[in-house]
Amino acid sequence: MTIQTRTWEGALLALANEGGRTPTVVAATTAVAPNRVADEETLMAAYAYCAEVTAQHSRSFHLASSLLPLAKQRAVRALYAFCRITDDIVDCRTDDNVEERLQIWRHHAFANHPPLDDLAAVAWADVRQRYHIPVRYAEQLVEGVSRDLQQTRYQSFDELATYCYSVASTVGLMSMHIIGFSGPEAVPYAVRLGLALQLTNILRDVGEDWRRGRLYLPQDELAAFELTEADIAAGVVDDRWRRFMRFQIARNRQLYAEAWPGIQLLSENGRFGIAAAAGLYRAILQDIEAHDYDVFNRRAYVGTWGKLRRLPKLWWQSRG
Image (cartoon, rainbow, N blue to C red; front, side, top):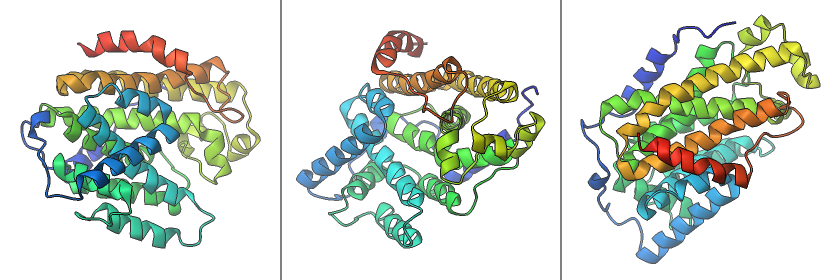
């Protein structure tokens, strides 16, 4: 198979336009103090909690976010915690009260003054108001993550791309309001980067997702490479699977490459952090290749030294 013209892109940009009607210029200096969400001590505790959540669940993102100015660092980690908690609630499929817990979390997460004992919601409310993050982006994310409760298969890449927009491109669009960006021309790049990051997640986590009863790989593309769900269940790594994964990784890298110019449309002091997040995640694809595309028996990753040695080049590339 060859990489086809993307029929999905227009649909995703329409979702992005629905999500937020952004001003022509949105700079980092537009961040303003919101109506007081909580006292300073509680806010600091809330941001510290979100930093702990980030460090625990994503070493790559924790490292990349540490390259941002302190205020933006705190803010993107609060955004991460909002996303992480939403995802964890949905992933807890043994809990009979998932829908109830999700509804409570949604109520807290979208309140301007959430309960003070819900530290993640407190930090997120402060960030959302401080950086004027369009609430519809956050709603789209919750809707996308909730989709995992009903849908476990995707017939085509177009269908999968819509899911990826909801759970990942929305994160990029919200992050732009924290980082600062030049204007609406930055939106397509954020959409592509979110899609690229989520596709890397999907390729890395095939085995883990299968054990959770989910298969995100497009059904029509599996069939085109003569692969079946029985092959996925058995963790078969043969020439069919290798060809399939080479195709998936080529498309994934193309999306990273097409998203990269958008980094220059971000506020200058945020470019390195976003470049690092993209570059470190993209490197996971190399680890998948290095282990013969076996994503069934191990989780691909980039070690600490692998991350650190990539940072100087990413810093240079982020300078444009």
